[in-house]
Amino acid sequence: MKQFGTILSFELKGYFKNKIFIGITLFMVLLMGVVMFFPQIRDAFGSDSPSDTPESELPLMLIKTSEADLAQLVRDTFVQAFADYRIELTESDVENVKEQILSGSAECAFVMTSPTEYVYYVNNLSMYDSNTAVANTVLQQVYQMNAMMGSGMSQVDAAAVMGIQITSSVENLGKNQAENFFYTYIMIFALYMVILLYGQMVATNVATEKSSRAMEVLITSAKPTSMMFGKVLASCLAGFIQLITVFGSALVFFKLNKSYWGDNELINSLFNIPPELLGYMLVFFVLGFLIYAFMFGAVGSTASKLEDINTSVMPITMLFVIAFVVVMTSMSSGNVDNTLMVVCSYIPFTSPMAMFTRIAMSTVPIYEIAASIAVLIGSAAAVGFVSAKIYRTGVLLYGSKPKLTSLLKAVWKA
Image 1: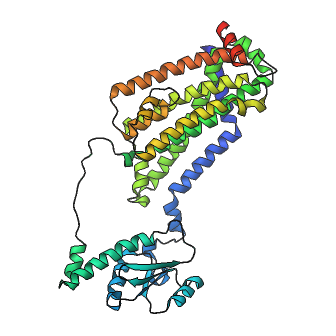
Image 2: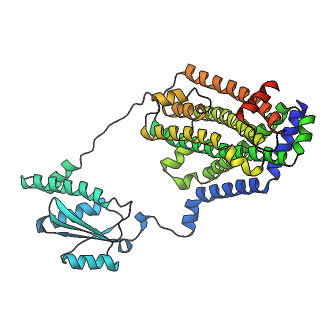
Image 3: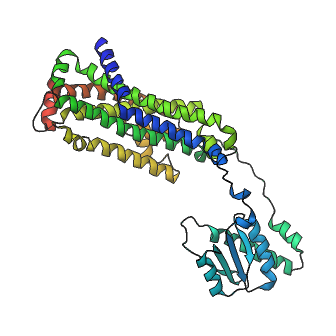
């Protein structure tokens, strides 16, 4: 235990003295500060929201219609639907309309050839341009209102019929996938980045010590289990402390600027994670990290040269990427309880992401959660001890990369 504590303390100090580690942490904290203080920064520079922009400064949208009796009704409806535009009727010909758009005096135009047909003119169509989708809904309402008015109904009555509001309520008996999607996505993405970053660092540190021949001295004075567990747990603690620092600072910055964010549902939901879900997040995060970090450390000990690390860890990286893709695909589809996800919930290499996703976005029986955590704990311990044996054998092998069969034989004898 004393050896383990010494190695853990030494490795942890190494992370905290690493300028890159400190630089990345400070940069992420600064980035979180800029994001959370953005409303105040925007107000300090006098940036106005679209709703506060004077009408004369809004981009111009032209409307040309062949139905003179519908022109004013179309304009009034468009004014309500397109609050970010200055709407004007025009009697100019199509060529003149095109010239205004190309010159920049107008941003876009709707030229209606009939009450149900139009051509949308715009210079450089943006991939986020949704004007036609809004116009389709608006013109459908205009057509229906005109038909009702033609039947003797007044414009006020027709507008009241078209503007009728439907009242409804939702009683959710399970999980709200839309609400929990952001929590899940952040946890999965954080786990993905931390495992790849710190797993690579564990493998690189082991390979560096091996190439410097320092490992030959260390391996004779300390147990391989203490060395492996000390290195991996140090990297786990370093990553965990870094995440707490970054997300903790983000939470503090959010509290300081909560009034500025107002009713922004996305930002507010990110900082209102249910305690139960946060607890599961920490459990699966730590156990998943340990399993992969042990494997990265074992593989790093078998590399003969530092340059071989990327090739050596490729199978582990691909395994994790496949798990990441499976989870993200299931999240995007909305079906997180499909057969593949259920199976992945009990495989230790995929369960940290798969089971947490199911817990966050579905209703999972408590016995399934307990079984998955038990498998993870047992697997983490088993992978740790096997990795320690591979570590002891691998660091003493130099020259060509050891074959899997010879490595397994050496581990079995160790």
